[in-house]
Length: 116
Image 1 (cartoon, helix red, strand yellow):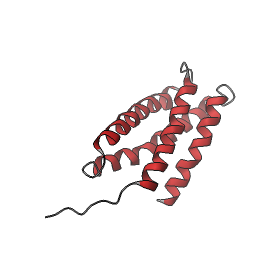
Image 2 (cartoon, rainbow, N blue to C red):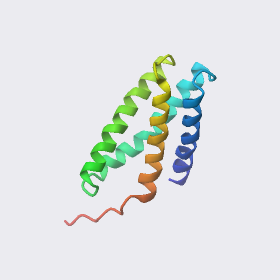
Image 3 (cartoon, helix red, strand yellow):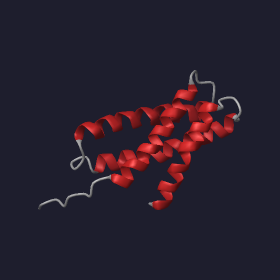
């Protein structure tokens, strides 16, 4: 788990850099970054689904919608490449999504045992 959190924390400055320098990187590097960012978000979505009974419903609903939108957009960019209008906004949201992964897994409440 710690390696996953370290790797996802590295995506925060990388996405902030990509937002500020949109035309300096290659198409392949951008596709790799978007594919990697998408893969980082999937465990958080799975965890939100598994622990949905124990989490705040409003917060987890908003985070789930946000992450689903980010996964769809980034999957499309990973396959289609660059050329997305206002793509720097997507990188800001990716940095926010990576930060939400860190926040969720570091500060999530402990799961309550189910009564049989």
